[in-house]
Length: 142
Image (cartoon, rainbow, N blue to C red; front, side, top):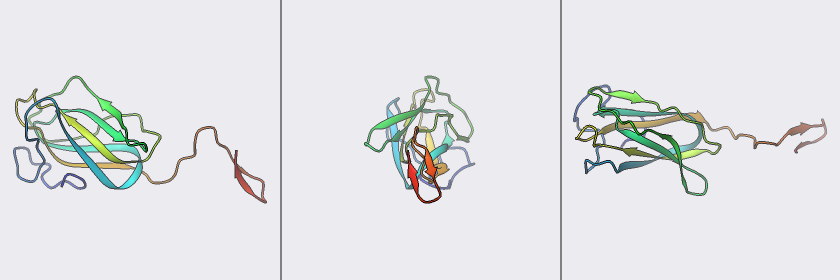
C-alpha cells in the first residue's frame, strides 16, 4: 500500500488511503520491501498528515541487518504535506527493504505516510580496490 506512487499526496489531512500507526508514541515504524534491489541515491517519503515525524530511516543489508541511513533528534510537526527526501550517505550494498521510524509525540497525533519510493541504479558496482584489466586477449579483475 505504501510502496510506489502516492495516492493521497498532495492532500493534507487524516485522509483514507494513507498509512498511520495504531499507537501515537515515539516507537512506531513501517518496514517496506521494493520489487528491485537498487544502489540507493534517493529516498522519497510522502508525508500527508503531521509531516516531520520521521526520525530514522534504515536499510537492510545483505546479511539481514538494519543499517541506519538517516537519523534526527529534532522531529517537527508541519501542518502541510511534503515529500521528505532525507540526506544520507549511499550504502555500498543494493537495497530493497527500508525501515522508517516515526515519532508521533511532537504532533500528539498520527503521522501519516502516503508513499515511499526509492531511486538508484541496478548496475553492479565494482568493489573498492579492484581494477578491471583488459589485455586484448583476456579480461580479468585484479
